[in-house]
Length: 87
Image (cartoon, rainbow, N blue to C red; front, side):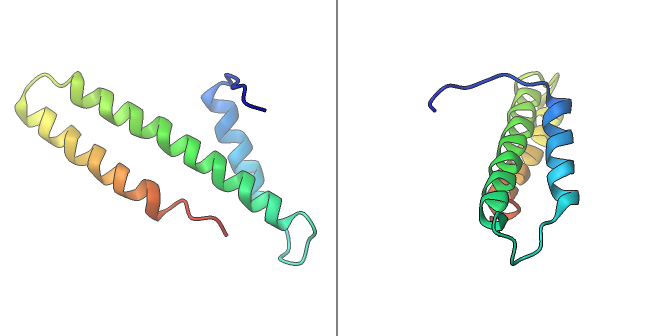
């Protein structure tokens, strides 16, 4: 199972939205696996957003823009651990 695959970001977003809308009942037999999968996909999505935020630091035109991009990057990095807790 160690292989990675490439899927379009739009598909990843649709999958996450679908899983969120399903919201299995707490007593459902797949609730634990559902939660683990949803958590992993949310983390992956946040890491992609974090990578884009880092790229904005590199591509900044001036110091002010770079500082703003760095602040946003650090905010997203902090949220990576806060918002994506499994249920």
